[in-house]
Image 1 (cartoon, rainbow, N blue to C red):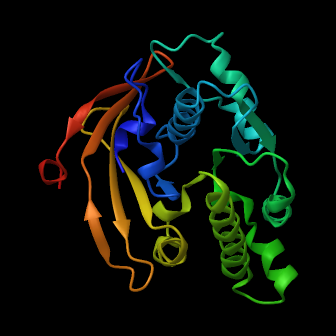
Image 2 (spheres, rainbow, N blue to C red; image 1 turned 90 degrees about the horizontal axis):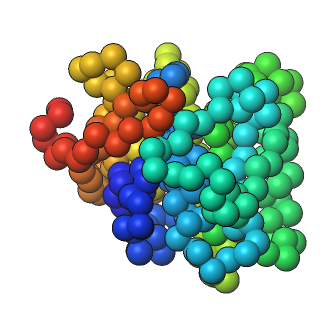
Length: 245
């Protein structure tokens, strides 16, 4: 898995999306460009399948958040590109909407090539989940149940074709991060983590794969430097992980 898939490569699109892990997590602090990276990933997947005339990427998000803070595009992308017609946006309010969608995933006439969910952890309200499950750890239970549905749905899709699931979350960088990390590692084998760079507005994106059986890291990848400048997502180049530890 390469971090370049979150950035626009012009006509030199990566040609081996099918070799990537099917379940991915993008983790980063607030205001680090996660939504922009997710949308660029969705655009790259849609552009990769240039022969498709139907929407083949589903971008799931909260409508209010997307309207309040829309994603920035990479320089060089034509805002009128037909690729955008192959990205469908689905608005959700909470974890119940997510479960309903994935529970009926196998009933869809056309399965997407990718499903992208922005701010996945924010869909799980702690108080609502505690009441729903009559358990003080209701939020954890709700997340596990939803991730299990996501996992089964993506596995089903990959028996018929190719489908990726990419989630983003901010909670892995907050006080309850160890618990969130543990839950995600059980279901998501590849995680991309964002850290702030040494200059304001710059960031570093690192990737790592984990074993589902014992949560140990199985491999690391190159890291990417990027920035959010002049309302653009700017790719500043690749670096080796050992250069930024």
